[in-house]
Image (tube, rainbow, N blue to C red):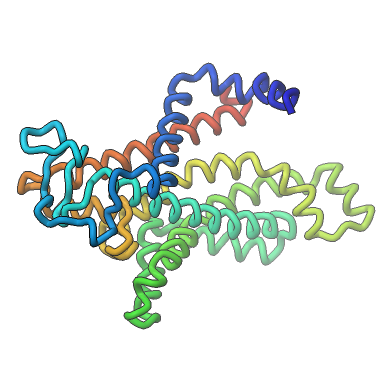
Length: 304
């Protein structure tokens, strides 16, 4: 175990990470954001969704350093008297959860279609790639809005809040599979003509086994980079949909919902209700993007 850790510490990837102060700072910010979100039930000063603990007299309390602020509410309160810091931590849990689940769904669909398309080729390859080309002609947010709208029309109104998160994950996931499919297809076209794949065919291995056991491990590097960057994109898409009012329900607000609610009070002087969730969203997305950029450069020898 100790030897394995020593090898990992001395690897090119670890060396590249250590010598980049920006990457180290981005990793620390990401850990703080993710740790605060996952540990919200234990780390948050208050439970903003416990109605019994809310007091409307605490509504619109400014941040603690303001003249009328209170040390009980470090970043102030919103229109319902909820602690803004606590709502940010709980909201980040939903944003991260939706973003991660959507990326996993996109990765599963995109990698599968990319492997099948690149390995089998023919008409199936042409059909998958033409579907991908058509989807690329539309912005991802429009596709997500379309899927979310169709789901809301097709399902009964009383079920909207229950299935809002799964529908949101589906909408964001479907809008992002193309980049995985095109990247994996291109890599598969190169790998399938190499000797180790030819040898697997000669010994009688099935195409599915060759794709999963031989081709997939050799195309996983670019997929990991895309997934890292796509998490930030998925979080932004979720925040945009929630800001437009078609994302998660108000009973389980994400960062986008908090920004939308706070925006109504921005020009009346209660700026902290929307500014602090916005800063949390920017910090989270920026740190994840910086990690994705570093990972892309570190895994590509041509960019070192």
